[in-house]
Length: 281
Length: 281
Image (cartoon, rainbow over all chains, first blue to last red; front, side, top):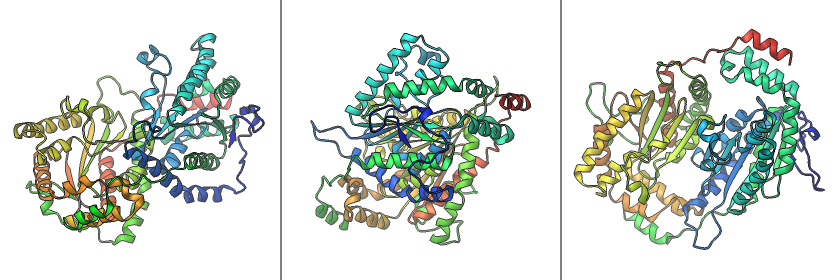
């Protein structure tokens, strides 16, 4: 897992990251899968702690209740679905909402590109996960020239302002690019074609987009460069090895939640008094 | 797990069901927990199969894409949260939305009681889970006389018509009452008071509602009697043993999804042609 900006401040793009690497992890697949299971409890505990924050109304003038937004972007077959099932699925579905953004509808196209994502932002104490996101509008939007250059240019700034506003209002914004190699994508698309139970995941359009691989990598490079920020960082996660990508995103969520230093809300009632009432009931 | 109507057509209410029983399961806790884990894959597979149905646009004039609505109602501490984490959480969060209904807001109170639940109904291929639901309006609504008797009476019919409409438009409606004993609730509330990390789950109002236990059981009896139907059945799930309740709800979901007899959508493209395109890409 590599931050899209190095410690020295220089930007990092997809070309700087080997999709087959496993940075920070010495173990192989078996140990990685075991680690993912072993850390599930910790992730679930931290998410419950976040969720618990929403149950007490903050005093007037206090900081807003924190929340978490995880943005997941990737080329087709890079493993978004696996992240949802195996990492996001480790958290309590009560406090987690996944929003998948597909091609915009005519009604969505009539509005600014950020309009459709706002209703899916996390509420107090919640985790929201975007499966694709407003970044599509500077990725496929740029590659397919769905908007002119000036509008694409405007969007980078609009995204930066939007995410800064989220961060300032208590939402931890974490953005992940699952980074696979073009060869790995061929193998995964071939598997979808080979298995009738996977046909529904395939669309001929996937190969059209694949033909624009280099253009997409350039669009990712620019998008990451323009929108990476301390309060809304981008991470490029090598994803040729599914177990590694899952472990990396799990760890990223754990670190982000640990960084909030949350505590269980204190009782706003007299515990002894309620014990006595309960015993008498 | 008992259907709220016996095979002979006679209604079954909470008073007919022992909360400590484990109907249909001979195993004890260890085997029950193991069975819950062992069946997780089957539930996930069936939910993916449901989700896959939404990817192909049905031909004009064809039946709607199926979906599933699970309604979970219970007295406090009966284990709704555990059902969400341990059963609902076994499904892919991409295709599952949990909606928790708390005390209605002033805006919600201005509308008919069904207004606020409609936006949370499942889309095509989706699973929606209601953590509490429109039934609150005939449960606490009746016990606390939040509406007059004529309005409560109207609501039973409105619910029946609403759920019949859902069923007719392709939504499988399954309703579960997690049924605990009053003694078991005392123990669980006491645990929440004993553990500082559980204080946030407790509210003094919980004991106020507990004092109305018999009135609630009567409200459940009437609600189940009036709204149980073949196309939207109620199940009373003994819930004093958490492992049993989870296993029963898991099995109910599995049986409901199996009853749809779904198949993987067939490819709407030429597989050989796409293989050739992929190989050349």
